Image 1: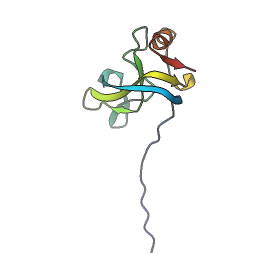
Image 2 (image 1 turned 90 degrees about the vertical axis):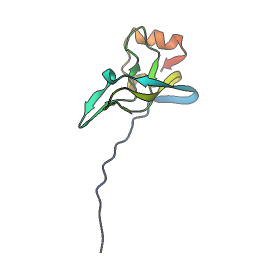
Image 3 (image 1 turned 180 degrees about the horizontal axis):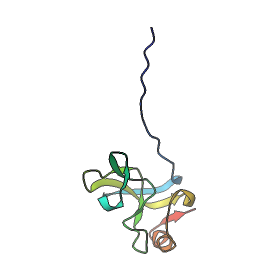
Image 4 (image 1 turned 120 degrees about the vertical axis):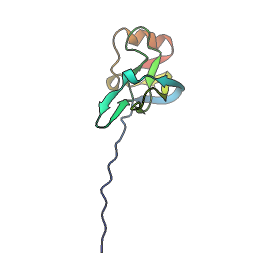
Length: 104
């Protein structure tokens, strides 16, 4: 007799061009960056942190659940990231590059 279970899961996209030179820091991810995803509010990997402008400090590395308010998350502050998978504005790109985070 066979038993079958359906398991829901999600896969994350790869935003890294290379792990060489990758530096991540733990930061407080604000709830305001979150996007409603079903019953949860999540800040997606690849989101520019803290804002998508000249004040950009890094890129969120992994999906972060902010359903219940601000949460700690991993932010890439140096390294090489795939530009096609990150929605960075024209103002954010030079700010990130000045800190050692390159979009290729």
